[in-house]
Length: 186
Image (cartoon, rainbow, N blue to C red; front, side, top):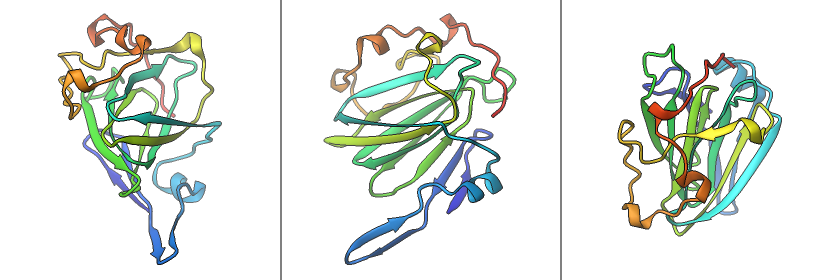
């Protein structure tokens, strides 16, 4: 596994080593010892998976403390544009975003620490998206930021009329309208 730093501190791309032959492939999608050596201690408590069609945009979501979450995300099948926004007020990259294409083909993963909003849009005809979190889902602490916030200026790689959002995601507020909590480290 390769652990690759991004321009945003603590946000790490993970490239697994893929062993392939005529039968298919094998990879380690998570290794506690490797993870702790490169990123630090973590205990994932829940794994989630979604299947979505082209143009589905989910996000930008986060949970408020004490239920904030770190995530290890990947696209198992298809392709997504994965987007994170740094919400750590003490960070020099507060309000900045990072994008990466995750796909079943490249098998890359992204470690998203606590203190980030997260979302993705499906670029392929469909996609299966999988992620692990280090804290329980808490609906009363679940919130997010508008996907089309002009301050963030995120290029989602698709035209607005091609995007499919839930009513919940359509109602999310701009970053300047949100009460952003102080996030503690992992």
